Image 1 (cartoon, rainbow, N blue to C red):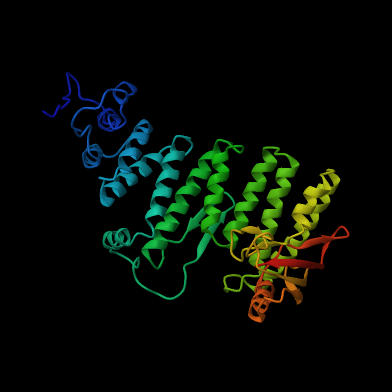
Image 2: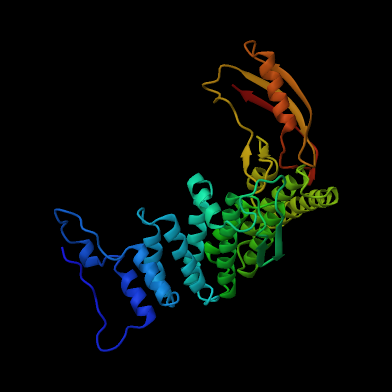
Length: 383
């Protein structure tokens, strides 16, 4: 098959038109997509390298209309890491020329997602280390870099990092942050994408980053006049996060900060309980949050995962059980953990392991007589 080349007519095509002419053919039209398949597949449209060369010769991209097709081309399996990275950089340069245009949000989000997905790839890390040969990117050092927040609506992360994986992770976080700023500039506070991006950031971040994320989520909810129950649930999540971070012993936060977070979490739980009571929310729904039959455990790292205390088996399929009693303090810790009884086939080692796991756990504090405080639990563990 001969290769068709479109040549300029009486006047030279604009820079945007030439790059777009290359990129647009990547996405087939509806008519072509419904056509009968040929006996042998033939390459259609330009390669990523050809699009990149055109962009280079024209001094970059200048139309956001090109972005969806170029993003699809970057994702193609035949596109090399280097070409894909350079095309991403071209798209990012274009997006930053239009800081208030919502068409930049998919660019920033998708490139951030793609880069984070590559972060754990050893081949990609080696390539990145070679590409970023200047500086300290791939030096191995002890310690961790500082993530620096510039404010509630803007995040800045230090580029002095200690490995390619973290370098790419921080880059992805910055891109999501840029996408958030575009949506906020356009006052799209009810956008599900805005909240999704915030949670993406929180899933990668430190205690302080998670805390700032919840502050913004609560601000969006208030501006958007979300239902009071939805706002209350977000407040409970934020309190869970503060409680977990107040128990963090990694040394990234001072004892004073942890004490303030713990006190703030207790106050927030109490305020939410009182709010739900004033709103005449069903008692069963309030109990699910603050006094469920099975206590709520909190995974001890931000962002918080919440789950009911796990069973090793269902009651119907269990080989035995252990009845255990303990107290959950107002700070979410277990104390006075005691085995009350167990089936005869339960080994002492099993009992000791269960006691140790409960003592090491962190729980959402419970309401007793209308106040967050100490409460006693009797629980049957099936194994």
